[in-house]
Length: 437
Image (tube, rainbow, N blue to C red; front, top):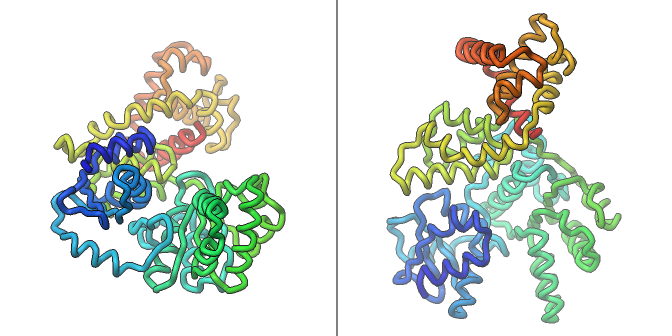
């Protein structure tokens, strides 16, 4: 079995973007591996942690389809001096975690806390200290990529450190295990697995919608664990009451403990997240680069992590210096796609709400200081965030010609250089418009 064979199967089992960005960098160490353990190398810690957390089981399955073995998967750094004996010793010393492997970088210390996630963070910390007693179940909900899984796995990592038995799965994995158990007439094993843990962590519970037989089984699993004062934590993209196709008795049980939401992070929290993620993975970014990423990307923490991997991988593989032009070039297609979704009316509406004026005033002939400033900000952001030309912007705002647009852009750039408050207003509005788009 060779790297080429494994990658060939893996390519068909994964998304094109994941394969091209990360998985194709896997190098199978045939000499160090055997039927008990398959050892791979990757260029950096960030990619290693990402593949471990997301694709270990799939890699294991791919190997099984090639030669029938099902070895443990180890991802280490290129050139890392660690023998097979040492790796096996480490694995045997770890507390077993059923199903999906926890990402070791997902801890409470590495989670950036801000106004958008304070309650969810505090609640997660509380259940880690007193599992099964306080806030049981804990139901964390919010949009994709905002940190729900990070908190879920932080609870899991903390539980493992304290010697507790945990199960961390997506609801899809729970359903697959359930289907497999029915098919093979092995429900006793299934129930023993899910009902004898100290902490049950379920990701994406909303996908239980409409699955009547699985809902019935999960209802009994929930009751068994709750009655035994075992901790249950679930994540979802919406409140229990908003999950269509979920039976009422499950909805009510999901709300027995505490529901906590994770909202879109503000600009300051977003910058802190980029700083922390960079620091944890040894990526040195200047303030200009951090601000550029924060103000030009979506609010998805998952997307930010992906961008940092791309930056680090590009610098490593192409032997490039990480500077602003390099990052701008790397992200130009991603940002172009964002710009195509932003329309001029979106900019006017957002600016008007933020500055507390009427949208119609911005397109009027009024020249008060407040309106003139709002109009200047709209012009600057329209040029920055959309593909509209200066004549297009002038026509939309009812201005005489593009020379007025050029003058306002020049004035805005001067203010950004001199006035820190104006710069902050611009960055905050840019962030809000990108998310609206």
